[in-house]
Image (cartoon, rainbow, N blue to C red; front, side, top):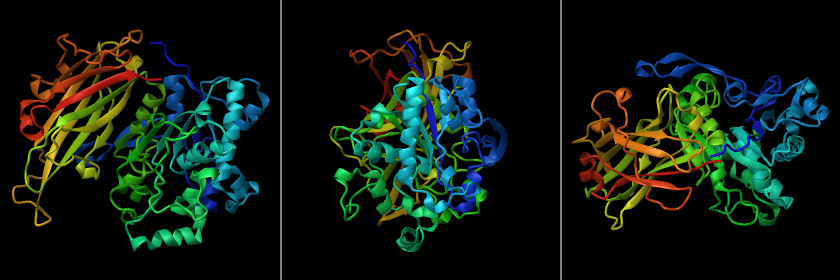
Length: 503
């Protein structure tokens, strides 16, 4: 498989707030994309440990060869060079004109203008790099600027967004707006009416304005069931979901520490600012990581965020895991949940985790379906070039837990409850011998319960899983669950692995 040519990357930062925040933001040459971290929560009792993450900007430069081109300013560089390399990183400095330090006014900022200026930057980069399109990487509000470009600005011009944008990756973007657990909706109404520091852009009325093309907009505002998270897939200018990746933060506590804000304002199911349910586009790829919206434990300046970003932009294979043909055990008043963690050999972090303790388990459908059910577990992207030279394979581990909660008279019952104890708990160890020139990978998979001794000492026996899909470019195999899972999910349940080329 020949690696796809690299595309330019444009970073779009998040909301800066009022005058002081904007003036501070514009002092940074890279708008925060160059911020790293020396903290990671991995020690005993979730205590912080030293872990140096250099920043997404520097890591893309070191790991993927992206160039950082500045000569007195990136705008000046673009103005004085006829050609630029496609493997380059650019910052959309949309806040500069609103900084009082340069004679601007914060009141002049308008999200639609930022999106229109982003289009001008993309057109310049495309023209001078000869790249067919660019990748957009955005934090928080920056993702809404990108969606305004994709869903409104370009369609209003009669242009296909896919001709300008290769992929969109968002860190903690409030795709569904920002809501609060307190105030019974009054805080949102007060924010949207007063427009304090321009924060009404996170309310439904303004979001409808900048996410809806003129030909589709209702002058009376958003319909009752309108969902701001949705990126429509109908029509000639629809941007495909499989080109969008949403990184979702699940740690509100560290944002509270960093910013002096109360996590109670948005609730525990959040990254401290954006609620989990509002942080993704339905149908797009997602990864959940226990990081806060920003700060020393933030999403952008994290190894978790970078590893997902790198693999989505530069990986060469996509791997999907699903739990299929599930027939959950019939138990009265029982709720079933699944927890998943995805680990990659050699990384000091998990790249994806959905846990009950972090308010984001996978809710399993009710028992009794005749034809069984399919439960998506995780999507990830693989880089065959990242395999350690001495390992022989790329190794990933999917930790799967299934838990039951019981109700009595409509309330949770804890009579026979064992806290943090799963009904099923095992780890699927997946080894991939990926030849970049081969049309299909060679995979083996083994449950940890069948491995004698430590996982680190385990070596596959050479037996590989067969490809059950004869179609070219698609590799599929079903893996039996351990016997301990059968009384819970049924005899027909399997984990289905699907691997397809990426990029």
